[in-house]
Length: 506
Image (cartoon, rainbow, N blue to C red; front, side, top):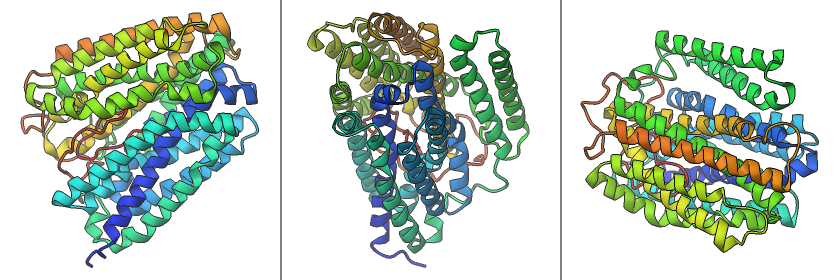
């Protein structure tokens, strides 16, 4: 059946609207954390659960979401994910207690794991040739807009109404996107609604379950340790159970005929090194975003709108510089920009350690934001180019999916571990000087993570110009691989651009 002439445009609109809802939710929720803590009586541990409940299922199930999109009609998988995301968001808005809210955030993350890997993939498989490049460009531009306005909009909603509106504004957009995709995906050729047809066989549900349980055990142990004590049976049991589940996950993936995580790609030194850099840098980024909103609002007295607006220079720098750095990396290679960008970001995080009550915005906060934004702008595009350049074209979809999952998991683990290491864990809600001292310690830790990521990049990433290579890790496409496509210029947001699948990062 031939596609109706207007169906691809509607699918593009639905994809932009749906992915925009997920991007928007992930940024506005961070700004709302202090207000949520005050309304529900939550300390740092409670807010960690609010953040990590979402990141846990999003990161652990993202590869599963991509595999489902390759095996079943992608429009249907995307529509189901969007409806579930809308329902979970509405439930978050109605939450009357911490347990309810965390449970709904877990459901949000699971739904987002269906949306994230498929919202752009359906655009790539619906369009072809020059039309595909134009469609991806429009998608990238609009998602950059959603990401940029998220903190500002979240702050305005919290100040003008309530933190509940941060969640309540999402369902209309997600439901509209689901309706558009469900209606118009059927009008396209069947080949555009599935992946490249390479994904066959059973879905690796066992691997997804083990990954989720393993991460939940470790994150839960880190979050409970300040109050329950490191020797508590609950803490030790959670930690040991998490490690055991992750070990079992590796064994399952080694033996599975269609693994979610094909371990063979890690034979490439550059691929392993680039993902290690991703893990460390995005761990630092996740902890920074979590703690910065608390410091600005609970220690410095900023309202939510002002706190969200502090991040606007970062997005402006990314929009301006990231595409240019991406083109430069194509000429000189990814190694130097990755190492330099991570180092500059580390300096920015050290500057955040100077933020304190009574300090002026232009003297303390703004220099840190600008330097940190410059570092991300130099790092992000070359990082993705290095990941994709380490594998053959056939494995580009798998490589990008792994890299996106690693980024999310880095933020998850850091949000659990760094507040604990900085003395900010537990059920209490630190204010004033106590919060500032812990925040400064955390920023030093984040800077060390960024610097270590830069060093790993320098030691593992090749000097050659990045790009898909045939001498990388070879083999047949594993389950979850997506349709190959031309790579556009990097999208200018906090998240590295991805390759053939280009999985967006909420």
